[in-house]
Image (tube, rainbow, N blue to C red; front, side):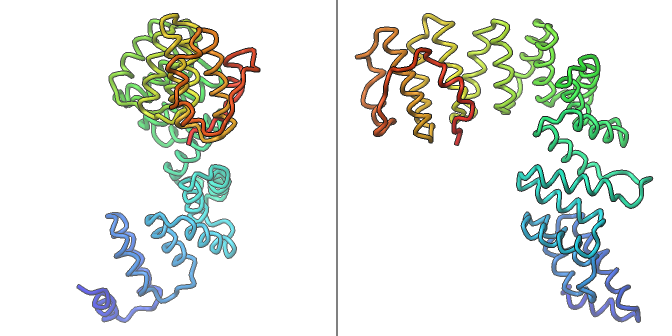
Length: 355
């Protein structure tokens, strides 16, 4: 059946234009539910009143489904100039910024959506609250994250993700009893989610339950968890409690997941140099590998300086670790040995280029 025939058949009944438009809007919603966005887009061509807010909203929805986020933002701005408290427009605008990784503008849009929600008795858009909560998690504004995920749980206590991030927020805020309750609830609802085991591992170390931390780590290792930032935090915490072999295993796992995670090379090299006498030479090789991924010339020079100093300390100036491959990685960067602490300069540089 052609799109024109749909319109012709619809117009066999004598109806006002706004009712015809409502028929096509309902059809758009139906096809959107089944992800037939091209059909919905075609149906919008038959809408009579193309200057209406409703038409612009439908356009923005379809563009959002098509991931054309800049156009979504422009349309929503046009809508909000006409109707500044349009709840749906603020949500769509927030979603567009969220998926563009612009967390500050997405937060602004979501907060305005909450403030102008037309019917306070109706349920909130849970997806919007979830994304706003993630914005607060990324920004590490834990009190705000706690508020949002508590609101989601008012809508339903069956959202495992909400318990998980609520537990994370409580943990970061130092409310350990509540954190444990929330994380355990998340684990009951979604036992196969590796993030639960990651946060439980961190929590157990925080509260001094070393053996439970081992058990949680063992469960985490059974999964294909690839969040390098969380793995790094777990590795750092095990190092603080003197579990150097576990830390080394975790750092090596991170490098396998993401070979460009430069800070972890430096941490692993330092760990080998200071905590494993049998692996001191390997610390140089690790830094050499790190050079392959360092983009900034200053970073390369810092790494190269540390390589030379380690080599000098363990009497390997003429070893294979300062061969032509190092020169190739370094280009025209000159090395010097002015540093007094081998890893000090690297440790102070937490923003090494990881691209």
